[in-house]
Length: 320
Ligand code: TXA
Ligand code: MG
Image (cartoon, rainbow, N blue to C red; front, side, top):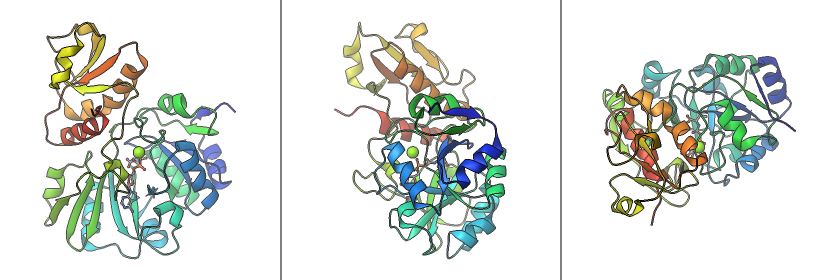
């Protein structure tokens, strides 16, 4: 089976309704989607991704009504405020789940991750389906998330019938995940909705620390989002020993003087962090597929979405 890249919404509708899994575009990264009520389809997601079943899926909806009717037992005041400010958009909220949500979707947790993505094609699809889509990022477990249909096809060709073509993802990094408990927010994964954005609300904010087994968000696994080649920060003492090694360098806005410029990718020559975030994963993939022996990356300014870029790089770098 050759995986079809297509904009055909009615084909996507038919496949999902029949219990098949397909890749769908979102503004963050491509997702691998299934009817959340269909245990066989959901299991197939784990199988195709080679993902451990302890890692729960996010549910994608087209309206708050859909979330309330199908997924959560409460939608507290703070969730309403965050939804007003950031949905549709790259924010996932973890809320107490309805008993009817399958355990295979939430890995047996009593909470569920929900978001309304900001991608017109996907929104149309979900409202036509009239049920939530369970979808993790459409990459093999642990590898870099896909931000284009071609990225999905490079890894999953032949394993799924279709990739719904929504072009390149505008954000380029996975959603910010917040767990809501009373009037407190715990940030489980950073993203385009930044800490600074969340601090504008009258809430207590805490962070989850990194975990290496059965974490509450395995996007928080210490090692994740990794290329196959070794990746190092440019300030790693080991980098000095790479003299004579063919290294590919990922920079923010200006070339490093230490390496030949033809071996470097600038993520945003204009120095914009949101553009750097959009280009990060395709640059990592390009380097991974090139004939460079190792990949080296700069660190990014640690504010706004720069915090999320650094977070992903920290999880992707090679540990000794
Ligand atoms: O931007 C995104 O969030 C993308 C697009 C496709 O929406 N999805 C995505 O899904 O990144 P995934 O599965 O690759 O990452 C979702 C993370 C996982 O680390 C999972 O452990 C965590 O969300 N998660 C899901 N449900 C959870 C829950 N009930 N409690 C804690 N963490 C949860
Ligand atoms: Mg993922």
